[in-house]
Length: 326
Image 1: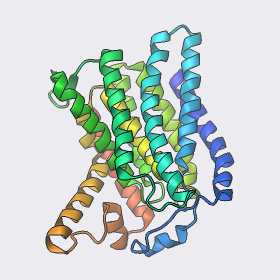
Image 2: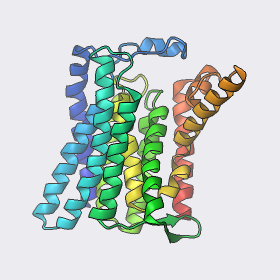
Image 3: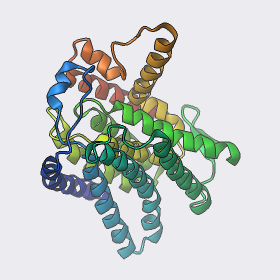
Image 4: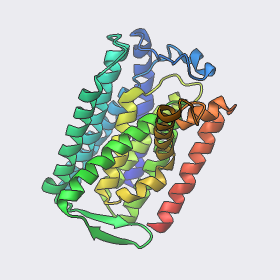
């Protein structure tokens, strides 16, 4: 059995154990979900469900990636060990920003949470550090892979750095908007990360294969408790972290242009919000019954399970298409 398969299974088991331990703690601390009164009425019964569960994903990632780091150090494969850490720092950094936001909202009872300007500054700072490390530390260059034509293009560094930062911030925001139905963000992100891991296998980028395998195992372990009816929600702690994983892997593999394809659902969720806001400001009316998009379908009579299945299947199909054109 390959190491990546073993670490996926180990990550899955560790995250289940962490969930069993941490969810009761979140309940005891009364870190409960706050539902919008103007949202789907079916969501009101979720009020009080433990949230900020993204800390489970965060701890699982730290334990398993660190364990893999020491494993490869022991095997004297120092390059692989060293390259596992930058993307872990990106994802954990984003998770910490989300944790501070969740903590202020749910524990300190500050309904506004972290100020948007502070939140954006934190995400921007971590994104800049990651992109600069890819460029200066790992010397990955600015080559970007173009799907379909299957060629790389060199982007001038002065254009690549802001482009890469924008990719990270946009992906993170899109994943954050996708988190709104039991298991939706977890399921969609698992499929996307699996696709990126398969591409890493095709490109023979071993450190990303290992990191992706860990992420898949951890998210699936969390998903066992996040499926409908959810026993825990990830909060911004989890959704920002997942956005970091996806964007970090895509940039490391030099395939950020594949994200609009494999992350079509998060893209549509984001576009639905933008359209809704702009149209409402201009006309005072709404195009969608509620944004993001998954809430529109809920208010149109779809059950949460149907939204989850349809959105996950769309993501799966788009990921298969992406692998074919990569």
